[in-house]
Length: 152
Image (cartoon, rainbow, N blue to C red; front, side, top):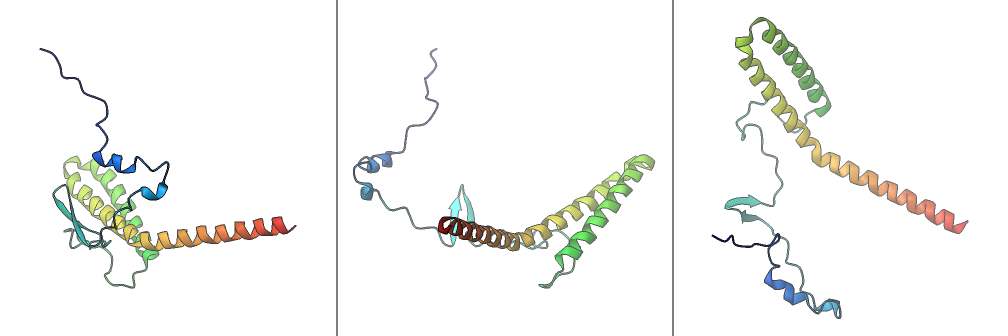
């Protein structure tokens, strides 16, 4: 019985022929499609382009820090970090003294990690904006320095 031969890569999609004259005339290429806005389906699941962080309650997780728009992220992250350290030490103690009762501590540690992760994800948009501002300020400084070097 002979085995069917196959190539390492699939053939290119048929629309590559639309770009055959690109080298001679770059304006002959098709315009890219418009960005998707709203809901779309991918591999049978429906997704949306709205970037919204689901709340912990939506995920079925108990929230350990206060609710509301005016959360002091630094304070809450420190509190959860201290609580995590305490629970890890208690887990080590339980593993030494009562190894059969470790499951409860592991669940508590998991809950603290989920809350920490959610808090950190809540700060990501602010972090992205601050990083972008910093990069742009550095770019402006480098360009001003280059202009000064050219003038001299």
